[in-house]
Amino acid sequence: MLKSNSRLPKMLRRASRAKRRGAFLLVAAAGLGGAFLAPTPAFADFRVCNSTQNLVGVAIGYRTGSGWVSEGWWRIEKSSCKTLIEGPLESRYYYLYAEDAASGGRWEGSVQMCVALTEFKIAGTNDCFARGFQRAGFQEYDTREQENWMVDLTDGPAENNTLTNTGASR
Image 1 (spheres, rainbow, N blue to C red):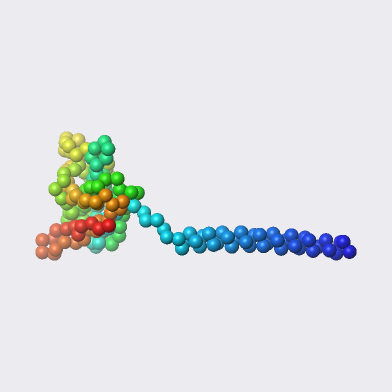
Image 2 (cartoon, one colour):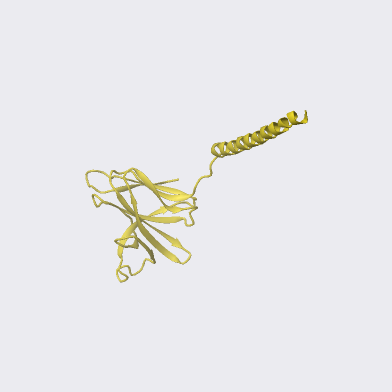
């Protein structure tokens, strides 16, 4: 009689192991589901969107503890966005310069910084030509110390075939 009942505990052990495995899977699924339903934290960054129909090259300038830095080029395809600076913004002011690859149009401003023909990260804004770089006029953006910022580049008025900037938004 003991032998015939010996199967019962083994079956119960299997059942309890299956229940434990099922309970673990249920808890894991609930945890994953909760992660998808929980509010996601906002990512802080400086993004540039290209709302034109052409490829755009973008450079950014900013001040660090050791001085001015300009860097580029980010290639932003038509109707898309790119993050230029990831994480919370550390400066209040950022500077942007962009060129339309097809038409040569520019988004520019009055703040002069150094740029290069190929990918670059340049410390300082003085003596650009003497150091083998070019100068470009960057547009200033006051982020009002927000942690993130977005600039949308759009086509300008057709009559003068220049490109303008629509400004920035939070």
